[in-house]
Image 1 (cartoon, helix red, strand yellow):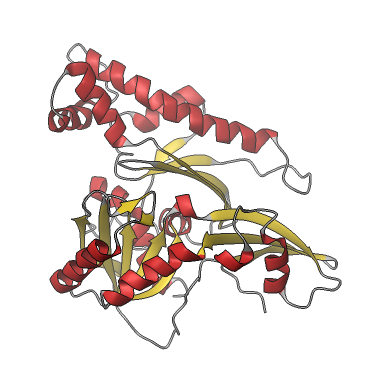
Image 2 (cartoon, rainbow, N blue to C red; image 1 turned 90 degrees about the horizontal axis):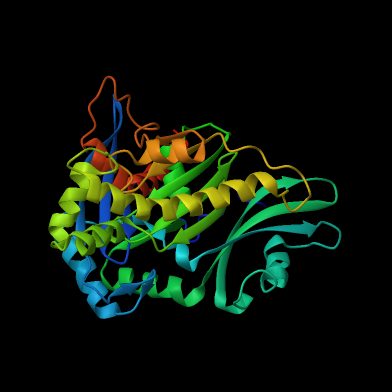
Length: 360
């Protein structure tokens, strides 16, 4: 029987009523959040971030298991974490569409296994995958497949087990973010840009499904480093100037504005490249793709002053900052527990925890 979501690599039985914790692991830190259901909607019970020393995780791969376990054990003791939903690093996940012919097809997973090596550079034996049904007709099934090297998943499972924290599920960052920033039931096509500290994720979602993902080694830290180098100041001072001035041009901000413009224009070009490709190339079946309605920005550095306006004007498309509370609370009636700027950095974590409320 086909499942309706590929992002359940290791699902937990639904009868287990556990706290709804999301855990977003990057190379630099772990963000966590706990959601609870109240009469006013889903609310944040607690949240936080713990730094990960350099060299423990690189490009989403755990390089030092022992030290990673120490970080998780410390987090468990400090916050009482017992059971969490975890994001998978986009750099390690392969996402592709696959059409399987129905005649002769006895088992969908076996059919995917036989085709896997045509699409990804690892063998079926060395991969863990899941899939989602996109469409079907009398002759075939159109699937979206997500695959990740088995050793990457096993490493994550091992460190969680040794830290005595149960990993209830692993999920793509993109899918978690989409659950958080796209209103439930919205089937339009959007581009989501997750502008983080060290990297940027670009995702295209259509009919509630992540169709495309790309990760760039461009982030807010790069912009701060550019200011640091150009103005010959400390990184901390550069970070402060970046947040204070952003892309706001005035007599006192010409140098910072010029440096930031050079940096964000590189990101703009990458976003525009994917945007244009989507609209000028047909899908695998030779059909026109649905137009992207707008670009949605999230991530810790997406609140850079003037960033959404710059993208919108220079690319001539509708660009807006995400509302991460769209599926949780009515912000007009209830003030969220996390301020707006912080909330953008917790989009993945919020989306992970929201999964427990998907069918409410």
